[in-house]
Length: 241
Image (cartoon, rainbow, N blue to C red; front, side, top):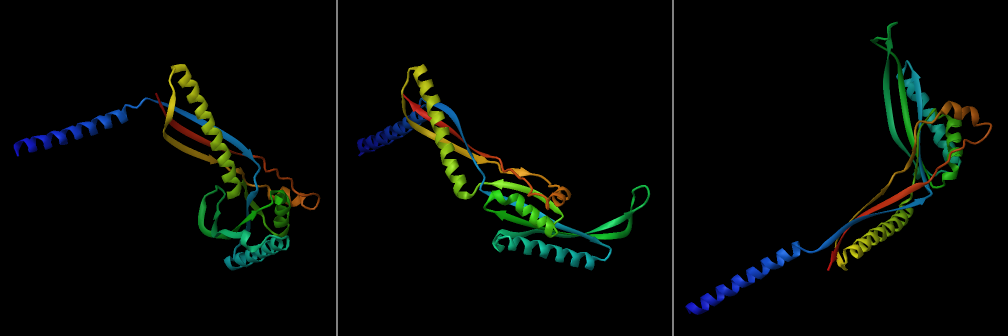
């Protein structure tokens, strides 16, 4: 019986030692770590335009009423131009008191007027109509164009991402092959791969609505979308032997 117990303990100890050896081996794998970057350029096929109507009046109700009339005119004009309701949404509505100031610019407790602002975001699927839509909104009563943001649709972003990722992986593998040849070793497999990617929409800041309103009757406002670059980065650890 004692021999069996000793034998059993010996087997358990041997298995434990084998497990430890395996763990040590796995942490001491010979590897090459490389990173790669891939970029592709695409043309935006979506655009967000942020309009606003701002009105002022000493009577807050009149300021609200004037604002409502102007914004309704803007929405109706955009709808008449072919933009469906689902591509228009209110993003902000605010009523702000404007206080009187003295000759030194110091604010008093007396309210001079009320400022009402209603912001509307319009999404276009045809970026070529951006200037035309801006002119339509300004002519209808919008007195602020806060931003123009050119973007990629989900479908196009995914397609470009896949292309950029393929380039990044090919770049990483090329570097790994070069390093392996210089070290006189052979790549036998892949241990890990970490992927990151992204793109930045093209953003234009505040738009000059006074200039737009003066040009609207003469010619459409020219807006160029430019290109968007989608970049993917990959960090790969290759096993070598």
